[in-house]
Image (tube, rainbow, N blue to C red):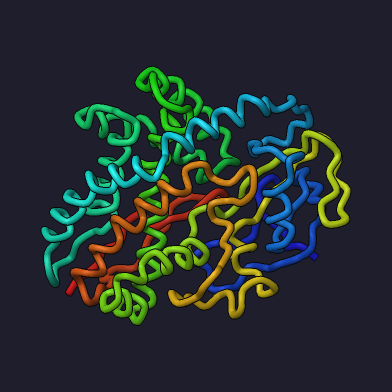
Length: 350
């Protein structure tokens, strides 16, 4: 029996969010008549969907029509992006970003209230966005504001007004980006200037709620890369993602017909007890998580290596310098069905 919802066209999985006091409900695949989509929440089912060549990224619209994907073009785009995100290039960006991270972190006040989102995550991610996309840093803040509707629509994909605003903003943004692989142009700028700060805000909120984890990373910062995988599992940004079948697909015994839409409850899958022991417990020492926050298989996030590099490069100096951090005001959350994130993180650092 599935939970009733106020708006039948929007999902009501209240457990699929970081600020929920209840665990996500994990259940077998089912077809939601109101959403007109299959719903997957078990880890094994979501992983299979990510790995399926017959399911392609889609939007929240329930329209039945489906255009065949440009598989050749998609493979070429991914290859170009992987090449652009080579280990050498990531190292160069990390070395360029690190001094800015250190300067900003060293300048954060001790035992005074500071907003980690506005004072740390946002400016550093914006600097990285300009660096990666080649935008003039003087134009970056203006473009970040233009991109706000795009991020807001991703956070609440069922809002038609936000969707229309995002469409207009995308048109304006595209005029600023002319070179590099497509994922590192306007969409990459939006991801780095908006989604990346949201990811950091979620991760830092998790650390603030678990001071023993913050203390451990302060004492052993070399654990940060391992801890980041757990942070992505436990506090990843995406609540749901959408796919559409481009052919008839058998997914774990479930027959999905060509044109049908699928909702992937990524947050829930990352809390599946069949895959993760004590899944609602945050454990920076957890190994081999196999988290799905960045997807998997042929449709995994092509910028995953960049995201990991940025998250570690920005977070490690923060926990290295400060032995503790405490929230001084309750967190106000923003977003919707797509993702939710703290609007601010007002803390004292010591």
